[in-house]
Image (cartoon, rainbow, N blue to C red; front, top):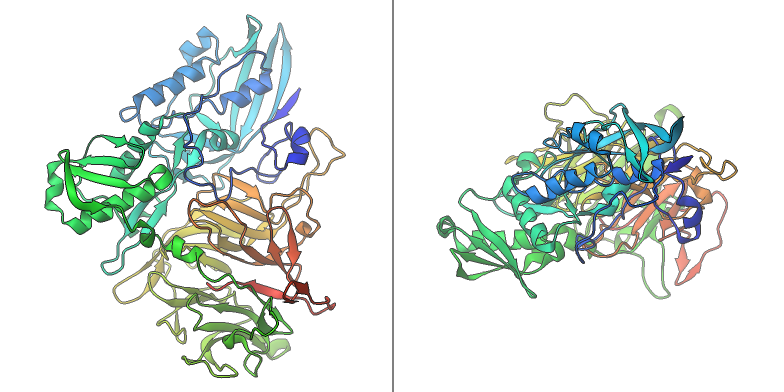
Length: 628
């Protein structure tokens, strides 16, 4: 028999896909809980954990066992019940002898593995063996974050089952290392970022740190666990770019959850902090808690007058970024224009036709709408190059004027304007990343790589709060911190490699605060493992969490003819935290600008109102973008 752990990708394919699955990175397609899962998604109630129910085959028993570890990663001193319950639950999959010999190690967390192909082999006397090659993605730590294992070799795991009272059980003790599959992580953990204040004296903002909360915990325990995570400090990715909770803040008792708010009690040491610091703590807690329920602080059980979590929306730059104008722009006839021009509505003043809006291959507009950047081509043959131009200072002339910058090369990336930690313009020349010295974007300096050796950067995207950056280097996707010193010098911290199942990574954008949209060469083609006459889906876009632990194809469709082409450019509109995904993704594939929808994509031909123009062969729309 053969079984693959999997989740259905579309309602019409559930019957077939219930038996298929995700293998190693070069194999079949991945699954991912949702590119924009709300932190509140799994908070509707405590879920009953998986158990070795009646009638399971050997394959089903192994699949269930790779989900049964939910909660085992939690620190035994902080959440002893969840930790011990998980281990007791897992021993229930074994015979008494195997359970007695199993010595699991959870002090370093649970290893997340790609959904494996599971095949049992009968060896007689009712016994069956299952040998797995488990591809590790990372370790889920006792603080709920993931330490990525990109590029690590597969781990071999062996399971032998025997019939006990008609039920399959493991007769040999499994490996001491505890695993959880992608499906197990998706089904039994909710993505829940916790937030830390950036280390900026003048304009500190909240930065999310992705964590995973067991859905087997009661809401009260989930809140208590979140508070513990905050007290323990930021994870590996953020490091020293954010501030931990001040030492004078000590949480007392268990937070009290009421219908309208969450009450958090602090020790008397908090009296040393001013109202502003305590209010910031309340807003930080509110963002970090499930459902973002209002927070009220007390000190030694006495109400802290004037301290609340009101105004918390203003602290998260992702909220601001999600509200920026969503006019879509494209390059047509080597000039920038908006995709839709309604009758009587003028073109954006920065992109009015003129001598400077020519020879364009890529462009960007800042969110304030008063500055633009163009990548223009010139020359032919050995003298061909692309150069970055920026719009002249406001007011905007008619036609607009653009000035050349010091950045040129054979192929430049799409430029991007950032708002935080300060207004700047960024671009890559395919080798190095550059950032402007000022908001006007005219003079650009290389971004420092810190202690790293030279890393060629061909595509990049900066997170809404400006303290994290995702980039592609030689086809590899990486995420790192982005810092700026007192002299305005930008630098990239030590990067974390993020694995995807694409054939090659070529373009990246921030889909949510903690999820990336990645485009590139299509995934490796394969056939369905159970029905060889059915081809596995092809895709050239994925959503992947910044820790690499969860991934799914974009859009969620199994039939996209254009998915066999390369995605060479991509831009995203960050989705507002906690809101359903609306797929604000534009990209270029096979030389044509595309707009993504929930289950399909369409070419971005210029339109007047709702009427698309007649496509002209050889005159395709390219390089789509939103205001940054």
